[in-house]
Image (cartoon, rainbow, N blue to C red; front, side, top):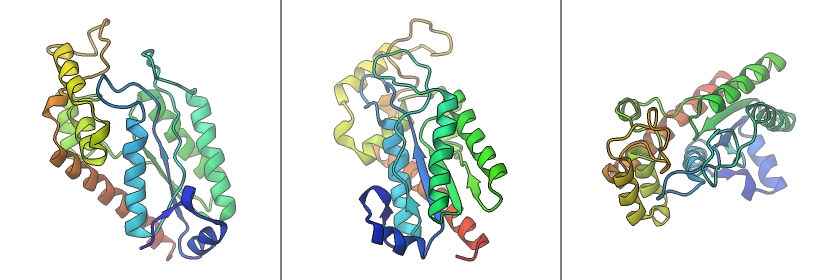
Length: 237
């Protein structure tokens, strides 16, 4: 299958693609702090790579990513737009894609903030009500068993899971010494009960591994690819 990443495509590429697929993935993350050792673009880097890998395997379109959403955090680097604007932005992009011939939209998110998730779910619901011929899915890629197990153990942000995926996708962006500093600073703390918690990490980055990151990444690609195929089969693409 060809990789159909829209930001690198031409008009002719798009025409050829739309003759073969009606499915597009919109990746959305956020620009926010991820501790001392991971970059601000961690959320979008992860989900966009998942979208591109899914495009390679299924032939669907991977739309250009949305780097901004709502976090609500106040640490330096976290740059927000409102939840309301997040909803409207997704709807505008989806409707523009629809005017070009896309009929299946998948909103894939790399950010798990409560307000953010509500905003993208609302976008999906409103799009479905407004356009009878448009199908929208908003999957949660973080509900796989390994992810849930780690989350229940307190690995909420920039810990073992997110660090593992970055070690697999972009190890040059993981700052090893700062990973050790982050672990020391958060040892024995819980973000839910520590008002002075200022490192931006919940979990243990030192438990991260490239192998775990590869496993998580491949699971996410597999899940998203299954959704693409289900939506395409429903329309007999």
